[in-house]
Amino acid sequence: MQQAIRFSCRAATRRMLAVVLAVAAVGGCRPPMPVDMPKPQPFAGVTVRLACADAEYADEFLARGRIWGTRTGGAVVLEPDWTQADVAVIPPVRLGEFAVADVLAARPGALTERDTALKWSEVLPAFQDKLCNWGRRPLALPLAGSGYVLAYRTDRFADPKAADAYRAKYRRELAPPRTWEDLRDVAETFHTLDGKPPLPPFPADPTAAAVAFNQVAACYDRSASESAPVPKGATPDPAPSRTAFRFHVDPDTATPRLTAPSFVTAFGWFHDTAKYRTPAGDPREALVSGTAVAAVLSLADVAKLPKGLDGATAPQFGLAPLPGSAVWYEPDGIARPATGGRNYVPYLGAGGRLGVVFQRTTAGEAAWDFLATLAGPDGADDTLGNVSLGAGPFRYSHIATDEKATRWQRYGFDAVRTEQLARAVAGFVDVQCREPVYPIRTPDHAERVAVLAAAARQAASGTLTGEQAAAEAQKGWLAVDAKTPKGELRKESRNAVGLE
Image 1: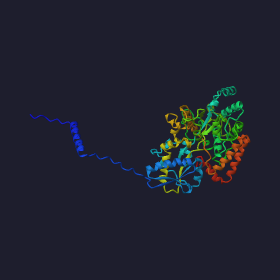
Image 2: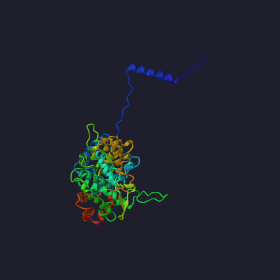
Image 3: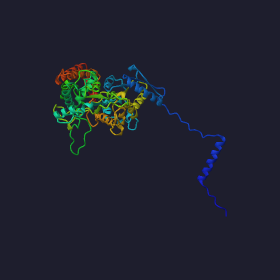
Image 4: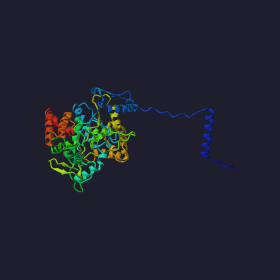
């Protein structure tokens, strides 16, 4: 009887492989190498002309444009003539002047759909709802936010004499101030001990001066907590109240509100602290020299704090969130105590950058794609990573205080102060506050900023009281109002805060 033949696939495979290798060894054959097919370049030959007045941002975005061009086949070049540009990088306060001139293209809706690389749902509400829009028209993409923190001298706050004097008078421990009233008390303590002004000078630049004033006024103008109590069992209303649209101007009447109690109190705070403030100079330099014990600094200024040979920021600088206020004012002018002793309302949009596309462009699709690359998660991280820009948050990931907070290590602080910086930046934005306030964004914003800054400077020098400075600012804004027809004024005022 014939024996059955057993067949092994594994053995056959080994024999076949041996034959192939033998043939290859004798004949010198090599298996064919896979060939990479070139990836399609959707904007090959397309040039995007970029207008950007800030040289540092221009250099950053041009460098990123070269990387974008490698992927897409397009090119980004700097265009000094704004009237010839396809794309512009602008501060948020300038959106109104371009929008009113009707030269901007609408942002394509497809960019902000759920599954796009832009990840629009991860953008902070201030940019989604207000800063990138004029009225309800979406016109821009966020490229950088702003960021401010309270920097203080740890060596001065550790002085036992100062701590004892502060405790004796105010019955609490000397610590980084939580409110503007606390900062005034801290200044009074050091002024009494040293006989010298311990606060930094009021900013000389009108824009910086207006930011300093508005950061104080915002906290007095409204409650940072829910605007109305929610009955038990009811669903909270996510819609903002009418006060959310009202800060510098009442949008219903287009009338300036600079004599409202919140503004009078803010002007008064600067008047009351005038004797504690050095008369001139740079706030950051005052902090570095030790003249000032604390100062509100932008992230760009934080990046310029002195560093040692090892690149670490000097140890005498601590970081804390911006102060809030001890009280805030109802729309009828009644003062209310702050919940938890601190009422902090963010003032957002005074810095940072937006990207816009002009209607005249013939490279619109490429232009928006380039801006979306800058605004997307990876592009935004690259912008924040260049600390010389001082770019602030505009995505939820930017205000993380967990392991993602390591992005702030690039400012050169140790682990403890890096965490302080991350928490201070997150506190600056404070996404829990439903009704932040925004800068004036109407086309005449520069003129209004100059008026407001001048009045605040007179209060900060002690020349005018809070009431007098408020009246001076109101008078100046009414004079600016007179240059624009009432109907246009009302429409611009409403568009600036997301109405119409």
